[in-house]
Image (cartoon, rainbow, N blue to C red; front, side, top):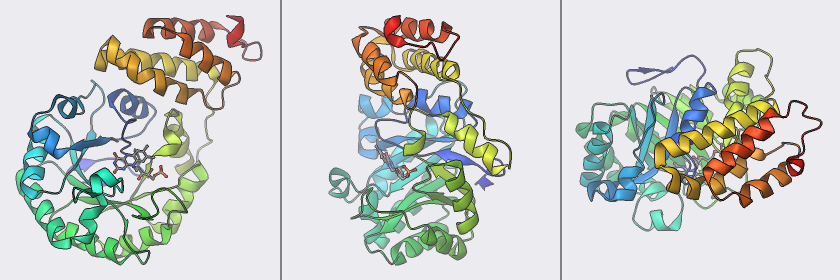
Length: 330
Ligand SMILES: Cc1cc2nc3c(=O)[nH]c(=O)nc-3n(C[C@H](O)[C@H](O)[C@H](O)COP(=O)(O)O)c2cc1C
């Protein structure tokens, strides 16, 4: 499967853009678990153009992470084009445009899913961005504002017309937010309507779901969001399952090693202080399904630095017998 000039393997499964989650350390863990490309959190195009520190910091990547897709949101074609140039200059492999976010703050600016009800503006944004950069461009959309999916099909065709290299569809309406079910039949309809690649997204919770989405929709690639948060190993499981190979289980020791790696990458990317602030809420996500998870989360919450968290995780990792593993005993 290719996005523009970028070759991404036969059955790629991508890590979705998740605000407050897919910073560089989380993306690199996904990449190291076999995910061929991860998406950044959405970055404000206005923020980039105004050179705001927080937006520029969202462009940080870690060595070994490439290729990486960076997502921007905004509504003004000129600002979006200028922001796209900044993203390209930062070395990103793919520029992704957010036309799916339904959060009020974003929609109020005419950005995110609001672009889907303004086809003319959408066309202007996509054309301006296409003219501005040479790297591949993707567009991430929802079903639209109505459940019939007509807007997704229309916007998909506009994207194709404007030289967008792939479309990602999360088939829920703007009003649905994250409630109800993603309507995978719309992914199949979009795939049938476009000649550029279609990436299917929404509600993949297991390797079996991934296999089913591919089969039922014929989409070119999959994108996983919530299920992979704190569980990068999910990518390995899905990719192996899609190749018909046995699904590898992650051992507790491997999980703890991954958590230590997350701490190290957090410090490398953000520095100790910021990383501590970010990871004290994010590291507990990695304890899902671990025996003793509640005790481990309590112990992590009591740590006053990342170094302390790292030593705790090392100590636990040294406990060979998982049965005897008791975070409270250490
Ligand atoms: C906490 C959270 C943050 C998200 N942030 C973004 C974002 O920044 N950009 C975007 O296009 N979608 C964002 N999404 C939507 C996801 O990328 C994805 O489309 C959605 O979660 C459905 O996929 P899933 O069922 O695999 O999670 C976000 C979703 C969640 C739950």
